[in-house]
Image: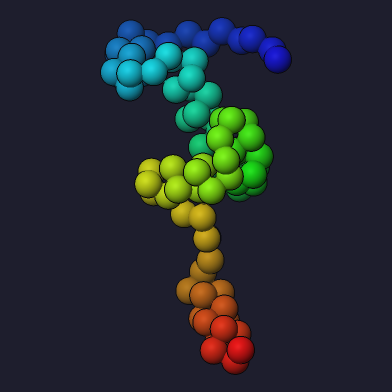
Length: 86
C-alpha cells in the first residue's frame, strides 16, 4: 500500500472531522464511491476496497444516491419487454 499526503483547506478538514470517522477512512470511501459512480470500478471491487460484502456496498451506495442499475429509459423498456416474454 502506498501512502500519499494531500493538502486540505481547514474548512474541508472540519467537515471531514464532523463525519465521526478518521479523515483517511472518509477520504478513502469518497474516492472509492466516486470511482464506482463513474463506472471505473465494479461494485465487487469497490466492496473489496472498502472491506465490506458486495451487497452491503450496493445498499450503502444506493442510500447515498448512487444507482446500482444505470440504464437509459430505452434500456429499461427493452428489459421490461424481455421479462414479460418469460
